[in-house]
Image 1 (spheres, rainbow, N blue to C red):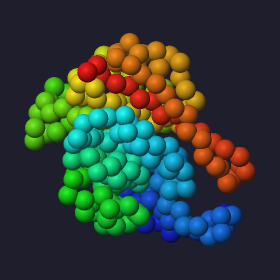
Image 2: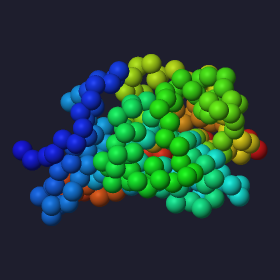
Image 3: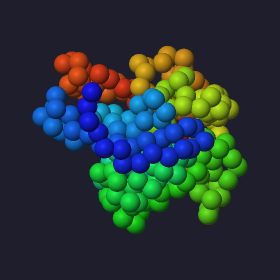
Image 4: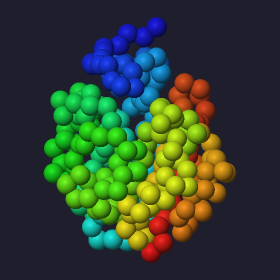
Length: 239
């Protein structure tokens, strides 16, 4: 049993969400930030390699001189922060359905909070990514129909393991086709998944987009003494 400090605990439509900070004696006292939804662990600052690679891999494939990016799921901010390291990013909308998560960043309760909240290119948007993705107006309420160069998604555990069953409609031909229409020609949709590569989902991406690929991102797991892995999917609109 490890001692931890609970930094916040709030009820949300998806259940109680909590942010806690603790030191990990097995890692020399390294300070970790962890998020739980009910009794389920959502994320940890210990394992962020794949979240960062989601942004790095997607954006390095684009040739535009100025990039407009959407990140679905703010979390602890690692995907958004990595995207903002790319100097060609002109604007970034980080869309988060749970208001407490946005507050953590604005109040500086999480390590990357100031980095995101104080970057003039970055807007922290309280909204439902999946509702916006399915809407005719798209992701920017102030500019309906606006197109983006990259849409990066890290909300559900995988295309078939959802935080909310209502999200499932997004991972269909119709849902992905609507999403593709929000991209500039040549734009990229990137998706993080905790599961191994899913052949059926890869095939679906190939049907909807001009091309698609996946990357297996491996990283050390100090708890097991071995390696763990996540999957990054990238799909490109014709252009």
